[in-house]
Image 1 (cartoon, protein in one colour):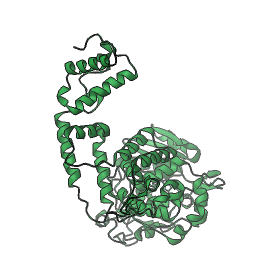
Image 2 (tube, rainbow, N blue to C red; image 1 turned 180 degrees about the horizontal axis):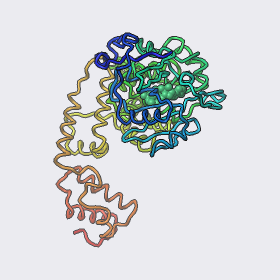
Image 3 (tube, rainbow, N blue to C red; image 1 turned 60 degrees about the vertical axis):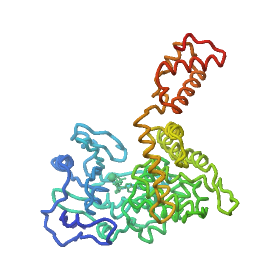
Image 4 (cartoon, rainbow, N blue to C red; image 1 turned 30 degrees about the horizontal axis):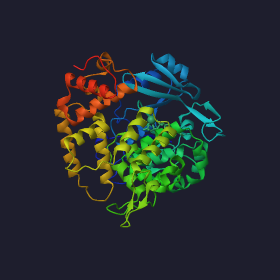
Length: 489
Ligand code: ATP
Ligand code: MG
């Protein structure tokens, strides 16, 4: 089935996501070929180049979906073609053979990295993860039939202004509906990642799942368990960054996928917090994700910041539960979970640090030295993120706007102290390890101890951060240990 394209971008652009189940996409109202999606010139060049060697080239996948929805600024283009990977390699100077066995190469053009895949079908999925074999085919409709959801199984020919839409993906987009191509149980059984993809699309697009597609998920969790953790992580991060992340997380839980990915979170459901909290720990965590800025490490921290609460729960004298030290248990569990999901060591370190530090209790009585110690512990580079996490945390306590005055006051003091004093870490001290070495402080743990003592001094009183004073202090420190240094002055 081939539809001519109607793509009046002005009409499309008045549709705003999430406000209406309908948007003014009018399939068939205008069957002329003179309306084209606006695509970057690099992509146009790529399509023309392939077509000029008598091959077909279509935009497929997320870019086409986004065009149809009127979403702009798409940078991630997938192209389907009947040209072989070798032909594509010979047509363009910069091509990376990213998945050549499966027919995919990546063409580098200006700032774009375009995945170009030869039309193919897939057969046999005995491991529930990969096809046993792929065969190249000459027909785009065959290629579209192997794709996961109807909204992803369309192809756009730019030169002709045509959308090929054999599974009525445009109707499903109009109805905001995620529907498998073919039988959901079979399609989910072939590749266990697809249910997770369905949920992340719900979180990104705010679409509902078609009932049969949704109902098929719980029965295919065994195939999901076989999927590589890197693929699960990538989809999870897209879900966390979705505009409908809250709904996506709820869907993840209700389908059983959350338990399969992060079983450690399950005790958070029905872990009631009483006091000012209106949500249990699970919903509180979901709301915290939705309230956090769109930055993936912050969203991980928001999701996992209270995961240690169930394990640390005790009942206080007034009957209200207490969660002493939960941030330590949360940090430890988060490290374990994020290592399992194969995040990078740097990301894990940053997320775990935010979680560990999220429970500060500021009062006006904090001295400047106390605020400086807080800054030094958190690290000046992490202050913004920690405050963002804390605001997301308090926004997820009740359905009311939280009172942030206390946090704002601390923030003002931090900014003032950073502007005035500027010494919050060893690197900011007026002396360094070499200076201490030069007076005879040996390298190793003792050197670390002396530097820590100097930093403590400077956090207490920034006036002391000059070379002369710090060298004297180091000299006296060593003397107290019975070690003579060459000179403290
Ligand atoms: P995104 O905006 O995240 O890039 P996308 O739909 O383009 O979304 P990709 O992972 O880039 O997703 O995949 C491109 C296309 O390849 C999809 O639209 C879909 O047609 C097909 N596809 C990707 N993964 C699968 C899968 N696991 N099973 C079936 N088809 C898939
Ligand atoms: Mg894509």
